[in-house]
Length: 424
Image 1 (cartoon, rainbow, N blue to C red):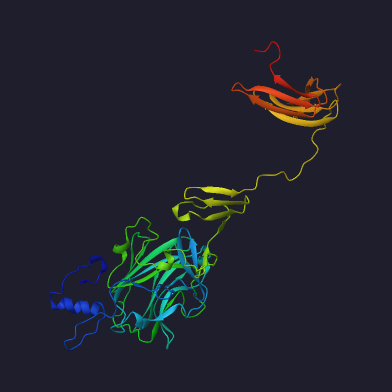
Image 2 (cartoon, helix red, strand yellow):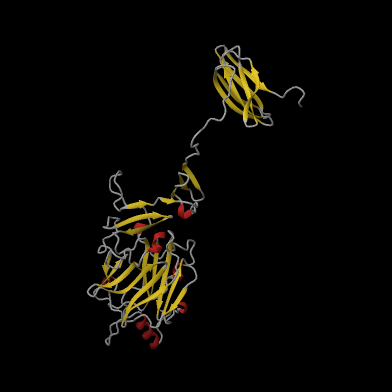
């Protein structure tokens, strides 16, 4: 049982004294009766998965929603169908219409980099439909996170400045509200606490209201990122339940089953998934993107080098690469040979240099070997051959003997390269 106002000093135990019972009732906005009916909180005190309530349980299609896999995790992208991504608040506030005065929200999202320049986008809202009034909500804009709620004096906004969310990576936020304190924890890191002048209302009436996921019921302000987790936890801070975590950006309190496994398929093996599903192919210019466990299976198109790469969890493996090619060629040297040349072979001999062998078809003139000197090929040696057609350079053994083969109509010859007389 929670008997203190601040989440950081929670104490749980049996209701032993009258003041504690009163604190309990005020804390969870229960209904006090003069009769003997037992007190009950307005909603269950277990995690309430708001995202799961709008997604089909059987993995079926939903208007304006697509499943996307990126960086090793799946989320949903909302492109329309605001009404289908909503449900009445009465589904969770089953005992009374009052919103809990202490609670926490868990949101796992992925925002594209372009979101830094966008106006406010709503992660969720609790909307009074008759008055078109936001009773509760969370929005992101220009790198800031805004917590919105309605009090007796009008709409209130608590803003966390400079929260780095729009980087194309997964992040998990835990927003805890208690009295005059709103606490934001990002990726199981150091909590940031803001104090506002008036406490969160204990009499926020939800009658006639609906939860809208990813919007404010309008197309304007539609959330452009991915949502993976959206959970309301009445009465306590969810951070101790999730942190520390081996993957701080993706701790789990309650994730819809359809985002934990591959989408369901029809009865035929050739049928596409019933639930719209896509995998992200990342196109990156400039620096090489990170490749780790979260990026395993991702493709990267290097538009600068015109290559396609696959992340294996450790490094980017080339699948398609364009090799460097000359843009043009120009005349450099006219090499005069003694006879009609049917083939050439360029080879390198260590400690000797670069050579070119020309196979001559004229038996009287034979073939020739040229050596690269001072930026040109110069005649190095004439070799007697009979209608030579091809020249091939190869080595045999570890001592790097050099041999050449010249083939003709009457068979072939093998020449072995050696050092001139007098050289050791």
